[in-house]
Image: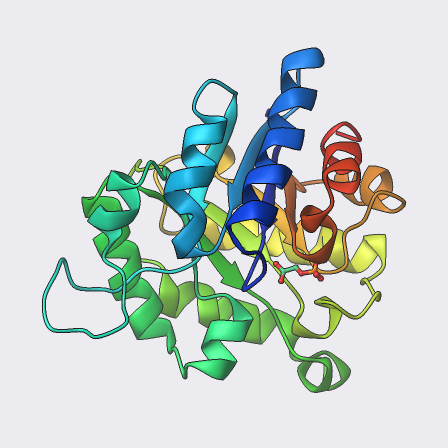
Length: 246
Ligand code: PGA
């Protein structure tokens, strides 16, 4: 399966930064065909401008979150249809920073997934254990619970991406071993078979301290179909190097 390398810019970048980064990536993609599918998820304020820069490039645009309702009185929130309207084709859902910082539950992530699907977006559903949960031997149980609660019982054949992001690996410079990642990705694939029509076609991304130095090894692990990259996606050279490691 062709891999997907996605950049999660998080809450970083003013307009000039986002446009410069998008331009640098678009230039690289024009010079050399990317070896994988590419996606950037800028802050909402940059979507339209970054989307305009990337319009003629193969790099897709995504949001970082959406509300579970289609529209209405939800101050500060963004509807899935607004992301589509801004040019996005993907949306990250249930990132651990939102689960922790905004008290997002599995049920809410599932409701957001339904809203994203209705708007024609491909959801990227994030799961992952904390350091304490891994130390307690509970990683697979936690991830299984998150999958069970965050995905619909029968997802059918709609596009879907799952990202395995151990909370303790995000922004820490630490990554699980290859064997640990292979175990979790194999487990996620098996869980997907219970609820998705074509589980083999769902891309399972690894995320958490992916950089230009470790990307080749991480992307070679069984059932790792791409990467969700935070910090290293803010630098065009790093992000491009990760993409070309596939
Ligand atoms: P990181 O973030 O690459 O900076 O660890 C990954 C993520 O949170 O998606």
